Length: 209
Image (cartoon, rainbow, N blue to C red; front, side, top):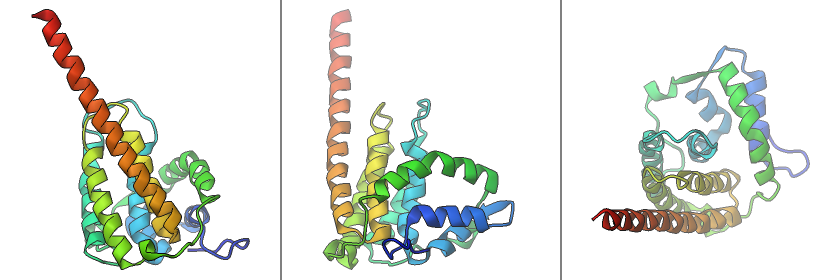
């Protein structure tokens, strides 16, 4: 990725902008993204998948379930200690129109830039192979929660995954730690929503008996 002249390390937002600006073809493939981000591929793929779930949209039952297999595949590879994602060649050829990517980038870039203000390289055991394995397990568990059809529950999970993805891409152990904490909180939030919904249903059933 390109380096930010003020900090000397790669900026995710700048790399996304550069890919959009310099890519001349009318469509951008997943392989183009992975090549642009090099060994930050895991974080990139998790980030992109999570962004589609983080942007509030009309509730569509099963919408988040579509993304769960992708998260699980990436999480398993991280948990196995892989440093770069293994993506089948047909999947690498999946494309998105440059116009669609530009519109998508216009919506998410301000949020990424805000998070980047406090994301910077902070090496620790979380940024090494052992930490990758833990992050992989967390991604798997969060993807399972994300797949649940819980109103108001998916967006917080997606943002926990976004923080983990940015922390992984920037090798920021503090961001990774915050992502794990947010993950725990979002799991608890979803559990509370499910429990509250179950209680409400039981009370409703008892009311009509």
